[in-house]
Image (cartoon, rainbow, N blue to C red; front, side):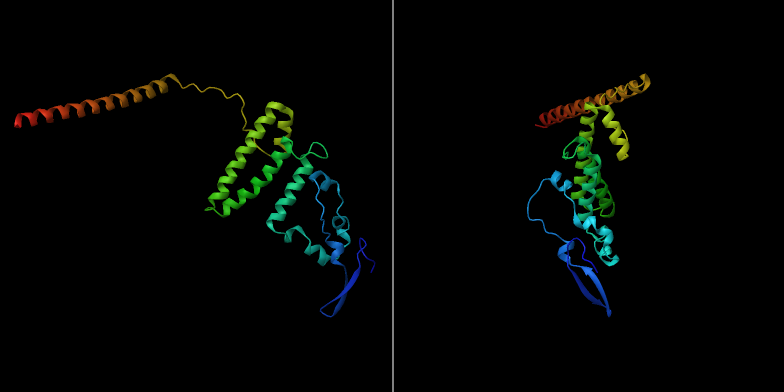
Length: 210
């Protein structure tokens, strides 16, 4: 069998049958140098390039279904950056930040629904939703078209209102509310007067006894 991506081929005996697999150094390449997210996006992964040429066993081993939840989250965030970036090196535009927060909110929502007593992540979920709302407000102030396009792609409902209208109560409801407030004040005054009067009477009785 010819080697894949320059890797050597070794033979392994599985249940008495000899099979050929590409060597693991060819599958997993350890990158010691540091690189920025834009440089990582431009790099070509040899494993992903030749993934379809690997045997079915290796493909199942390297499948995303067998990855841990942290790796799945990283994969979703990388895809969100690629899908919503404005240019090749974009990692911080409002669209990208909102897309990343949306992916994290999706996972935390499902997590909190299963683990209802996890108050720490529930608070983090609320904070992420508030952060995304702030970014959406900023984006709507800057560009209405970009805001509309983003919420359409992400499937987010339009709940941002930069100029909320003042709510005026009907006349009869307002009158009833004012009447309730007046009654509460009258009741509080009556209690204060009753308490003061009772104290004066008790003092007079004490003086008469003396």
